[in-house]
Length: 318
Image (tube, one colour):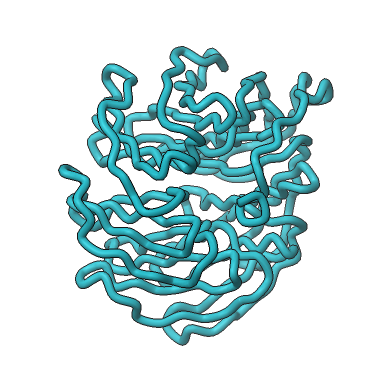
């Protein structure tokens, strides 16, 4: 699994992360600025999820736990156990529940966000990697490390279907705004489009390299793909053609700003965040965060980015 998801090696917290990087905002209030505030968080921070009411969860793969982070005080206000190797988290729209993929348990955990507890688990037929809620939140889409995409009933956990998309880990997932189409990336070098009404494959393409995170642009006409081979690839979803390849070293995690005009990309192997201008498709800023930044997420108001850094740091950028 190390070759598929870059492993879970826990690095020492870097002393250089203890100071703030300051600078003027790069855009309107719907985007973060460049002020970086890091704080130490052990346990291998890997992924970040933020609910619509501002609840921030950070998965900690080495301690089998999730940290609840307060963005104002820059501290962890709660930490609770889940399954073995929590990788990804998805909140429901109300923010009352969340779902966590427990990679090594082969389960999806259901979390009560009021009590901060994992209340039950749903078994799946492989290591659970990514998770998303379907169009009406009755279905969970769970990617597996064996190339399977499993569709679960979000209440009972029963398996509706499993779509086999190869034999290696499916590391990236993204939905269109109406949730009618799901895009799934495989580290085997493919991206597949799924019709979520009937849960069938519509089409696929082979970008090559080592595909990681995905995000659909505003208007659902563009798909951005982080390719760890050193690119962010841009695809036209109407014509199913690649329109750009933006050089970004070790591109891993992706997040769009609220206005859709900037794409933020974690550079895992070089310790940076690349800020890509959506119009020019060029890197306009690189924020040095050091360590091994993995996934990141934006707050609902768009003013803050939160980065899970495997080196033992959570970084807040605003």
